[in-house]
Length: 76
Figure 1 (cartoon, helix red, strand yellow):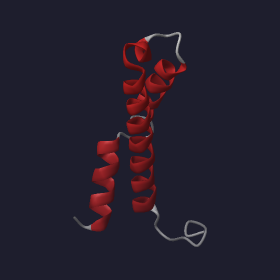
Figure 2 (cartoon, helix red, strand yellow; figure 1 turned 90 degrees about the vertical axis):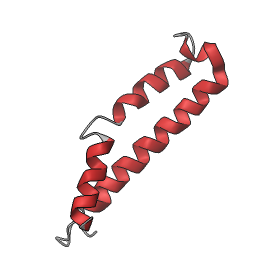
Figure 3 (cartoon, helix red, strand yellow; figure 1 turned 45 degrees about the vertical axis):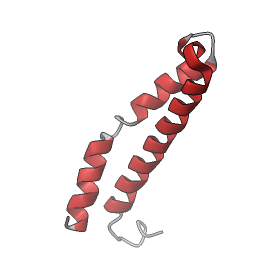
Figure 4 (cartoon, one colour; figure 1 turned 180 degrees about the vertical axis):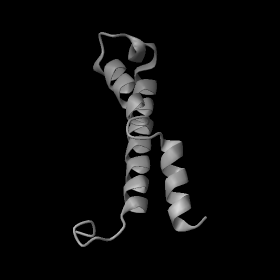
């Protein structure tokens, strides 16, 4: 509702994008590790999930850019 009220939500959005995409990648990476070598085989869904999750950290600004945006708006 802050956005509707005209408040600046840039920091919240940048932090949310960074946290969710980073956490999704860490979860997918750990799942891939559980599968071992099979995790890289296209026959297993984890291979595609891992591949698809990696790119979310780049869409709409990389996670490094999200950290920079949040720091700038927080005055750090």
